[in-house]
Image (cartoon, rainbow, N blue to C red; front, top):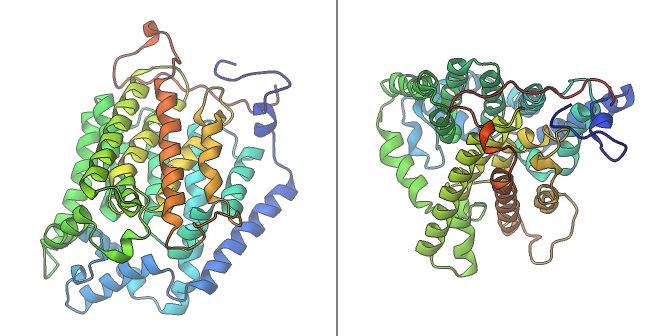
Length: 404
């Protein structure tokens, strides 16, 4: 089959074979333990989720949600959080980590469907068990209850819809995700690359209309622009800065002047976008084109965005990991796995053990992963004559459902 290697040395056939019942049992136990640990450790349903819920309660009490400088969401997120604001704390304590875990599993399902990998395969089980056990950002996201999880689901779902020719629906998905949290705004560049103007319009109009309508109900309708945007652009919160993984935040902690660090981060992000565009223009068959372009855009944004946290990696990681059965995918390269090493819990890292210094490990993972995706974009995957017009992705090849 094109795009996949055959032979005894290749693992694709093993990965797509059906998983045994024991593997499913292990996965269920691991996910339950992850959610249970988070419920015990976070009595308020997660610190980050609590910020949004507190903003909704403030609004219900007649105040402005933007009085809290750590509320970094559009006005539409306030209304979305109202149902949680009406629930008692003991319910949120259990409900939020369980919901985040389920949404992460759904994100993985969408990534597998994009790559046409059987949902009952070994990769389907191990690709979720492994991060839940040995990828620190997974546990952090569940424990914090951060709304990044909505972006983690929306991006693979968007690309899955696009792979089936449903570009407008893909734009609506991105727009809805941005209305909850603006993290996926860079994905609009994919619609530009593809020349899908209706999808681009949907991605812009959905959050604009939702937030505009919600802002009318706020006592401070322009709060996002007058308070939140300056906070995001300047990143002047000392507590937040300690956990930011972007080079723009990490390099100044190593003595690099802040303007130079910001310039380097912007240059790296621009280079990443150019690589993502080149990856899109390389019209080789299969789902890797969409997955690697989308992941490249998001990783480029994380290089320069303020703030940029370790759990943002879960937006791109499922897309890349699900491509493991395909020869030439990013996940087949050594640098993909090297990037993940600092995120393995329990590994000793001299001088970086403190939570206040783990941002250096996160920055390493982010930068190396971005380079791995960029290298893949610059590699020669298809002959020049194999290019297709923008917006016309070739039919994706399928991962084999049976052993080679």
